[in-house]
Amino acid sequence: MHSLPILVRMSGRPLIVLGDGQAAAAKRRLAERAGARLCGEEEAAALAIVAIDDVDEAVVAIERLKARGILVNAVDRPALCDFTLPAIVDRDPVLIAIGTGGASAGLAKALRQRLETMLPATLGDLAIALHGARAAIRARWPAPEARRRAIDAALDPDGPLDPFGVADPGAVDRWLSGDAGASDDGLARIALGSADPDDLTLRDARALARADRLYHRADVPPAILARARADAARIPCDTLPDRPEPGLSVDIGWKQ
Image (cartoon, rainbow, N blue to C red; front, side, top):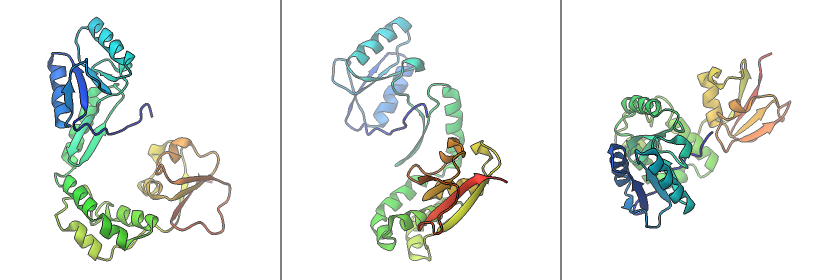
C-alpha cells in the first residue's frame, strides 16, 4: 500500500483551507460536511488543504505549513501531499473512501459513481441496528471467534443481513431470534494455479477473508496472503498439524 487509510473525526477540529477558486470552495464544503472548524493559517491546526492555483504561491504556502508540522493536502499536486482526500460514498455512519494516491481523481470518481448505484440507501440503518444490538450479539456468542463467524455468515451474499440487499428495520432482530449459528469451523484447502490473487476463485477468496489462521507453503506469494484478514495468523509449514485449532483454518499450497 502507498498510504495508510484512516478516517479522522473532524467534528469541532480546526482545519486550514487556503485558496479562493472552485477547488477551494469544494474542499470547504466537504470540510463543513465533516463538521470541521475552518480557520485561518495563523491558527493552530494539525491538517491543512492548499487549493491555490498559482504554482509558486502554492509551493510557498505548502512549505510554510509543513515547517510548522502541519500535514498538507495539496490539491492537484500529489507529489506534495502528506495526505489525500478520497472519493466518498456516504451512507452515514458507513463511509466508503476510494483513493488512488493522486494517480487519477477521475478513476476514483468513476468507482464512486458505480458503488453509489450498488449500495442501498438503508446501509447506514443496518450499521446503526448492528451497533444497537452489540450487547445481544455478545450475549448470544460470547466467544469472539464464534461471534465474528456468525456475523460474517449473516452478511454473506443472500444472507439475512446482506449489505447489498435492502434491509428493513427488523432484520437484525429476526437474525438474532432465528437459527443463526456460527459457521466456518473446520479446514479449507486452496490449491493455487497462479501467483496472481485475481485468479483466486470466489470460494477461495471467501475462505481467505474468513480464516482464523493460514497454513501455507513458504513459496506462497505475499500478494495471496494479503487477501486474508489482517489479524489471521500466518503459519508457514510443509505439513498441517494433526489437529488444527478451533475456527476456520485454510491450507494454501500449489496445484500438483
